[in-house]
Amino acid sequence: MSNITLIDILPLDRELKGIFDDIIGLKYKAQDILYANKGLKYPFQRGKKDFSRGLLTISSFLKSRGHNVKYTTNKNDFLSLINDGDFVAVPTITPYMNLVQNIVKTVKKQKDVKVVLGGYHSNFLPKETFSFIPEADFIVHGEGELSTANLIEGNLTFPGISLNNNGSYKISNKTSLLSAEEIPNPDYSLLPLSLENYRFNIQTARGCLYRCDFCVNGFFWGNPRYTSIDKVEQELVFLSSVLPEETFIHFSDNIFTASKKHALDVCDIIINNNINFQFSGDIRAKFIDEELVKKMEDANFKRLCLGFEDANDSIVSKSKGYLNLEDNIKSAKVIRNNSNIVIEAYWIIGLPGTNFEFMLNNLNIAEQLVNENIVDALATSTIFTPLPGSPIYNTPEKFDVNIKNKNWDAYIRHNYEPIYSLSNLNQNQLKSYLLLFESTLLKTYCNKIGIEEKDVLKVHKNMFAK
Ligand code: B12
Ligand code: SF4
Image (tube, rainbow, N blue to C red; front, side):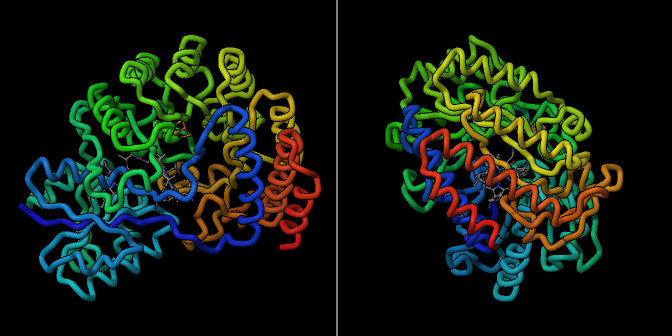
């Protein structure tokens, strides 16, 4: 039996004060009006705390093998929980790598422990991560449960474990996957506050059908494995016994409806157990039909987000987005015509292949989609960020991308400073376009919702002054 302390990395409130606060403030105001009109009570559980679902599922698995697990966060006094001889596990999310480096140094200075890193960043950049954080002893690749258990049980040759022996690295190029039936539910007992203080993202499948060049999910997880419907039921029933009615819960499956049968089954357990939450989910064009929409509305889905990414088909297909505008519009109409569910579009600004003409077309179409009520709003319109592990990060030259900044702090999603240029668009031009896109869409959205012009203009003025 081993002792392991998991240090969760909570999002930092940092650098994006100013421009970001103004825009977000207005977006929230507009969203609140839109959602209130559609009966959505507590969108996004704003102000609630986040946690890593992955650390909690690892905990369930380790406890089932008899290990002792403790949980803390970067915002707590983590040193007081850790004892010499323990294992300490820290997730690596790209934009927080500087923070992870500090945490590991602090731990190692004070305690004689073995540090295990895991998650996306260290999975894709193991050597770079060991040289960036030389104090780290191990990296667990891919899905964490099996490899972490074997690691702390001393089975260091188990697939998915990379080792750092005083600067000499043994890198694993494998991962270890649980079968769908073995995927555990999260160990909610680890969370220190009562559960209504947290924001919930539930996952009922691991993996993705696609391998988009701008994304890491498909490469990290492989093809979808669907959590057994009994486990999904156990989790939802448990949560409904401890959370207030109408709590807003997002299903963070990559494509919630990728398996129609699984999606219908999840809706059925919600309906049959009288689970009274408000749900949201991410879907993909074509993976929706009348039957699904009606069932999802019956299960109290209030919001669905469709991955549009860009309105120009040639750009999306260049990034292997497997999408086209027409299919997205058709899917949005299926939702609109069969339900009162809020429809939002995911949008990525500045994907490789874009140019001035495409950018203006993109903006016009996004505005039109909102004005014509095909979608209610854009869920996010963020600047493209080439994340480690994605083909665009691995071979940027193939995509005409020039990555300019390797300071991980800059890889935060809501960044107004692009970290790359294209041969026909420099960083300043990309930034100007992002601001133009954001401001135009915000104005369109606010006008539609009835927010006064002067409030929108004030935000615009501040945006461009900065
Ligand atoms: C829900 C979600 C959120 C939620 C909850 C965050 C959380 N930490 O769980 C919220 C909204 C808070 C969030 C915020 C952010 N997110 Co997010 N999020 C997701 C999403 C959609 C699902 C995550 C999830 O629940 N997975 C299910 C669990 C079971 O998997 P897991 O957490 O990955 O953990 C498993 C393995 O990764 C591994 N593992 C993970 N950590 C560790 C640690 C150790 C020590 C070990 C051994 C193993 C291990 O083992 C776990 C069990 O198998 C993913 C995309 C996706 N589909 O995976 C993006 C994703 C993880 N998010 C991402 C990003 C970038 C962010 C933000 C930085 C956003 C931003 N502002 O830029 C913040 C960072 C917050 C944070 N500290 O984590 C990226 C990460 C990419 C990267 N290279 O780091 C992803 C992959 C999205 C993407 N495609 O770009 N996110
Ligand atoms: S963008 Fe969506 S569909 Fe494409 S690989 Fe990522 S999660 Fe899958």
